[in-house]
Length: 113
Length: 115
Image (cartoon, rainbow over all chains, first blue to last red; front, side):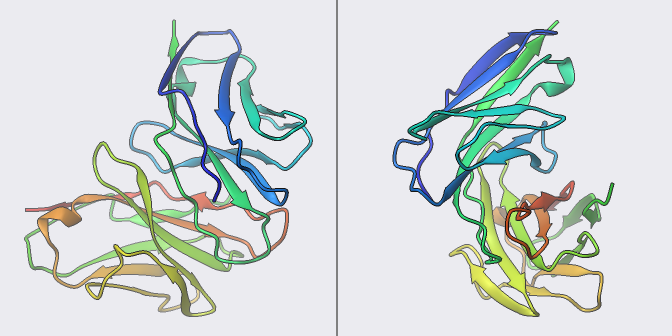
């Protein structure tokens, strides 16, 4: 899996958008960008993933640059419950294989009241 | 919404004892995983399992570890002779065999404390 680089920590005000960056400059053409988060010591929670196009779901938006070397996870209206460690993971294209997830240290997002 | 469940939530054992951690993956999922997270450290892959076989395992997953799908719903991780350094959160995950929908969903974890 391609290596990702994320800031160690970020702060965000409640109700504002949280923008979490991720660099993946060595990403290959068939590798997806996945985002998970971990609230305290709970199990990692899937947020969103994408290949080339920007993606949006009920939790977040994922913006991938045209060269695919970086991406940004956007939480449009952060709440206190969004305080968590956010992981950006790059994976090979899903093909029904047993691909493991390789977690880095992630970004510790703190949402402040 | 279907969820991965794990039992027990917390297991305390003595060093050298055997423990079995249990997971019930999402019912139509076909790939199963175990990860662990030592306190304050990264989430680490242990093993993946498909079609009643181990697909991949990490260096951590030595002879003391084994996995089993004893029936159509449970997926277990056994540690034969626990060590102090096995103390960690253990997470089970599952995914459906599909292309774009290939997302692993995690359970809440079992906290294993080895004394």
